[in-house]
Length: 574
Image: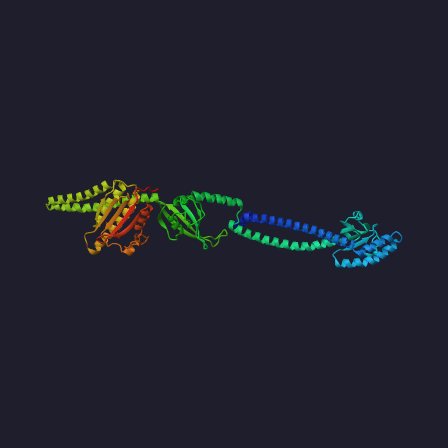
């Protein structure tokens, strides 16, 4: 039973899962938009159609009244009609039937010819007592005219809608005068059936036009619905509001900086999204969106946003930022095919400071190990000299080594009143000594850090001394020269700038490589270690971040001279 119930339950679950998106789609903002727009469009088209139909109706009635009035007034002054009506009116008192017959014989053919040439359905010419001389139905000649005639007998012309012998019609009635006396009446009319026929023709045209407009509107509404449905992914307004609120909350609560850069093929890149941390880290004072080449952006920020290969740690706006990039292509929300770049920023300023201090601790540790090894050798030497009975030479050897180490320690500690920097210099001196490289240290600075962060000094001097020691040791190993040295010189200029200069006895750097040595990954040491090619890059980033410059030149003896000039004091945001 369980094996049979499991597939059924799974099928029910799939059915329920399939039904849920359908229910949500029915409530989507796109479908609501389609329904509401369809109703508005239909109502608008209906109102327009009714308005045009009413206008056509009134126009047709006005046209019928105008045509009827024009024809009636024209016939009322026609000499043929006036003479025939006047004669019949005079003879009516003595010979009613004869006068009607004679007037009809003259006027009926005349009126029928006019009816064939005009859009009027009938013309009735009558005596003042309503006796008809003409009629659309000859059998009704001599009968009484049906309808209002009082205004015409009073000398006026009027129109009315009246249901006579031919049915409802729009008619005009006007008097026939002879010497100012009304001797007869002329009535011309258009049946409402003819009026309706003319209206229907116009309504068919209006209806066709309205149907075309409605169809085009429906197609446009459906196209907007499809696009809106793709963009909103079939979600309703409440769900979109919740998603937006959650998106904003998560985005602005991130500790990392996040930027979304749209790569537009028809224009410059645009930053379409930047959270609070990214704005703070990059020093941007305007919200997204904005182009990456805006002139108000700092130069470093413009280079960062426009570049495709800046990764790793970069010093921007006084901070060490770890950069990560990810190209993406939208596949939903109606944005398929649109490429974007996600740039993530992590502030590593404090971490670098701690790392610098830790590096100094490692340097001291390595120096202690080197000195322990060196002291062990010295103790063996002293013990051997004593065993050989040469105690004076043993004492002299021990005192000379002690004085040398003490002088270096005293010089460093008195010149640099900062434990981290002092430890760095002592450790680097011990490492250089272990590699048979003599390190000279000279300073003309007042004790202290000169307003610099210790981590910045560790990064600058540590990397420059390491490179100089490597270069001096490499040349000594290659040439067999025992005079390998490194000189560290610290001073200040007249304008208060700080000068850090490190000189070595190595092979130097060719002129064509003196700019490239500061590029990430470039090294003159070969491909023996993946760690090469980053130290000088960090040096330049830190120096330029502090507002200074760093350059390399040739030493008098053929080695390299690295000179970093920093404005002092410098306050760095940490």
